[in-house]
Image 1 (tube, rainbow, N blue to C red):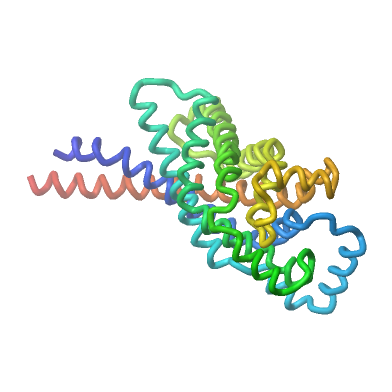
Image 2: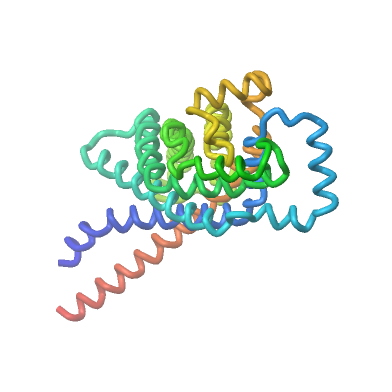
Length: 309
């Protein structure tokens, strides 16, 4: 009975292990880099501010630096919940679909990885979009408090209420191509490295996982960044002004010029690339530890079953 039990449970256990490792790794990364996340959201959510306003912001920051520092952690509790749920959902769906495809005997190619990543990302978005929108609104709320946008408090409150929790659902579903590209690149290069080093079922080293995670996220972010900025605008406290992603991107070009589509890219790359690199590095190590622990458990269970018989 033991071999049959092992054969039935190991695929499920392996998928659960990958999902929990991915969620825990990304949670640690998100908590560590959260101030960067808040800063890049505020840059992306601001339109046509100009140098005068930048100087005003710096002056306010110097006078109230303690308040500014605390504000960088606005919404961190919700972000923690969103990270755990979204990353677990993504990795579980991603690994589950991959294993189902492999079970048919089909070899997974790079394009298959992109499609699987997009499907996993779409499932993630449909479940966690309200949390993502809430965090973005909380992070960009400082733009309203500083008076960057609406004329009076009533309008500000109305704008906030008008932004639904499923705001920018379309752009978010479209941007599921981002993790699809990221993990397709990561998995393909990882498989190549492990084959080259003849380590079929081993994990990458921490250094390899870090740099590969950074590279894969960098490529995915640069390719999809204009849509990322448009999505943030749609989810911000002023998001009700935009009819959709195309309208938001049109306004960006009108007010900030074509270069405005890439406004905040350095902050986005710094945050997301570091986050992905740290998260994937931790995922590899946590997953490796979980597999080792699972093997020890199975050996213990097998030996006890053998003695019992």
